[in-house]
Length: 441
Image (cartoon, rainbow, N blue to C red; front, side):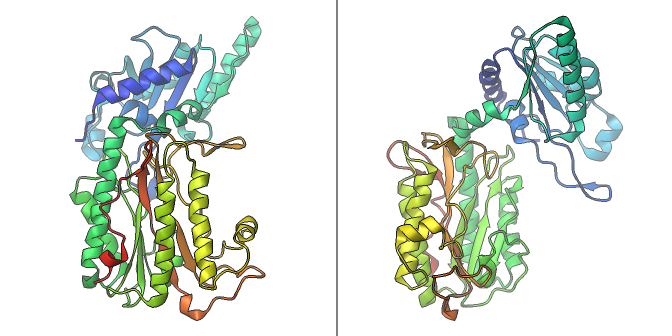
């Protein structure tokens, strides 16, 4: 049974409680989700709940009371011990375990939540709760909150409000601690090794599904929870479908294979890497040209992933190189600034160049605050993933050249996980090779 360092969660709770400044926060866990009939999908804990508790059971609630004295501020509501249920579904920590192992100041059965919540939050200034996220408990929370408002109004007390915990937690989660960085290094290392396994084994594989099995089996073998997201194993023209997950086409010599896959550790930290490799060991002339454009764009964008830069700058650096490269080979025409401004490149490159990465694959945190870009800071982790996808799926914009058949079916994306530092970023996924000389044989 996986257990992590409880001290890490205690430190996070202390920071969160200080930020609450008199408010009460109600953070719900995830619930089980039906797959079919009475079978559920594998459980995946809510990231905010995990971040503050480290408690990995469904249908639980953490209550944070920042107006209470130390020793009365962290309350857990959990499923109680139940021998019969545990025979069928596995071990539970129960109320005593929640206090003993997860350091709750007080724990209760989840069945007592509705009865005890009004008592706990009766003298809190405001309520912090994420609405439209956990329907199982939302009705209870909002009903009790409404009664609190009504009671305070009758007593002539100041009105209370409900606000989102993301206001506090997104900011906390955006900059990773030394502990989190170490976990991200492990997640990206395992993910990179899986991509290397694909590179070394591709000549022996005949179908996309075999590649998926190889990657995801490796994740489990290395002790990860499994894939962080639905693995994309896309050969040939399938690579031009951004979220292709059928993964059931045959591998044909002369095509490219785009693999976008990363593992999730037992404590939910994720890797997210994409590599594109030639099936058969050699790029065609056209494939190599497109690959070199994407690789140049990615390398330059990574160089700009440093403290003081921002994600818009990272994207624009990559985008300009992609557009200039596509102009040079006749797939775009016109002034580069004009092409970028009017978006007439988007039939060939239709996504941003990256996203935050952490407990969620598309991790929390703002990219812009109003009119201003959020500056990159030491400890932020983002992906850098430019690509070019050439197909007939999106019509060629007016004024742009038609696409010669020799280019069609080429889909290339190169993605790395980047730790922002002062002067030079750290490529966490560097173990997954990407130079043409490493990919050809």
